[in-house]
Length: 152
Image (cartoon, rainbow, N blue to C red):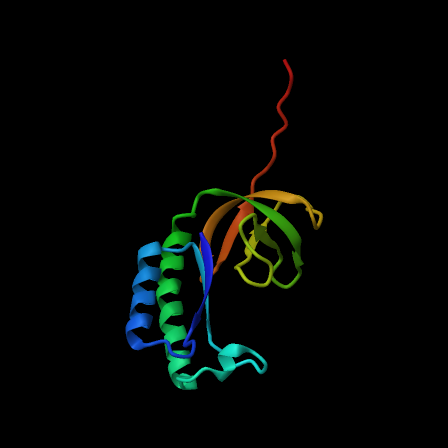
């Protein structure tokens, strides 16, 4: 379950923000992004009264993301030892490993899966990756070897 939130929308009270924080904790989203409201020229909200100070919008956004970071760390730790199907996006020569995304991961938004393989994997192929560890939003793993079953 994933969502994106805006913190500090014009008129948002401290009470409403507190309710949002409780909702986020209660829902325990797998993935959550939160952005500080940004006044965009030509939008109705840009003309609303009760605009919130920039520092306050940032504070609210950071509080939501701090909570989510802790939750993400807990959720990611549970994936250690599991298999994840990963779309191979390339090979990092410096890190000497492949990188890609799991099926639920959005490009340029979610974390990456960095993994090693004993075989050459073409970009665009899929690999079954055994997750070994996580660092922040990224996973570290090793591609599982495919075993051909012989006919008897």
